[in-house]
Image 1 (spheres, helix red, strand yellow):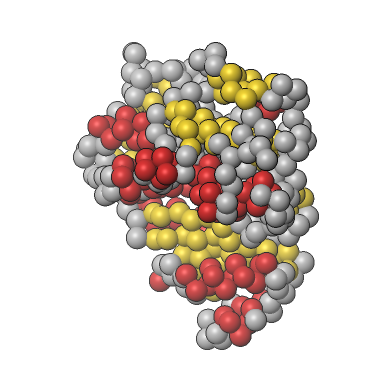
Image 2: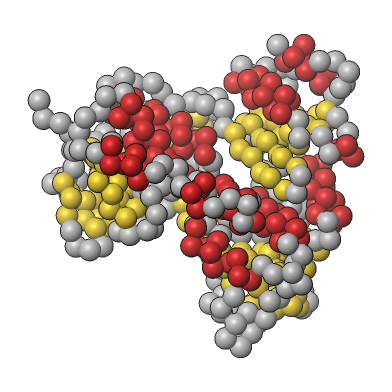
Length: 407
């Protein structure tokens, strides 16, 4: 029996998990991994945290040693970009001109940073943080006393701000939205994190639009729409990410909808081609609509589902999403998606820096944000999957054990 040829495009967390799951469960076909960067699959979350600080080295960021791919019989094509998919001939063309034949193809192309388009966006000393090389380019500029302007107050922006303050930089965070982390948290949580950063010495300006980056060759200041100037020795931009690989998929005639559209088995509109991770949108049975998730959990979960499908053991993907962010000594753990919430219940006192926010929609628990409260996060995540309807008054009472409320 012919062993199917598998090509994986994208060398990130999803790709590494797919390979591990396939080989562990007996997939024997030849596997080729195509990745644009020079590195084998690695973790991205530490890049804006411990790796940026210099607390861990490259060996702790790379997911699997080279020996793993050798033993798994995986051919690595790193530093190569997929430029075209010929579905009829089942061929993948690389930027080198090489053509690779496949029986099954998996797109695990991840995401890419959203870039500034204002005047001065191409000056030097403006950085984005998405890959290992980005961190290596940024580090020499993170010196005590330097002035850092962070554009964007999402996870990445605030994590970078926390690291930079710890290294002694003067930090200003600029955010177009009315509050920090507005896309993912309630006003109460935004207020808490803004206060934490201000106490650490970070200057935060919300509701501010960047009009231009000023400088002669290198960035020297950010000019805001209201005329203010924020002088900076270095600028780091964190204004979100967008799914990568969509143009490649669309050119091949694959359906796309806020990412590469897949079903619960990770199949694209061509059943011979799967897609996993940040680049995809998938149907969520829990929330009743398509979602695109930018998380390690989603990358791993979809990779396991794809591996099972390739091995003929279908197991539809429908997990409760989860995320996390480390800022100073705070660990924010998020379970679920809070879009459409109509009530927020706080459990614990934010002043203690250990509390949780529970999001309800029509009485149903849909999400939880937990700050330094791992048990609340774990119990909340389980209850979200069970579509629990907790009593809000009891939920707000820290004297009542949470397990008694959510069970």
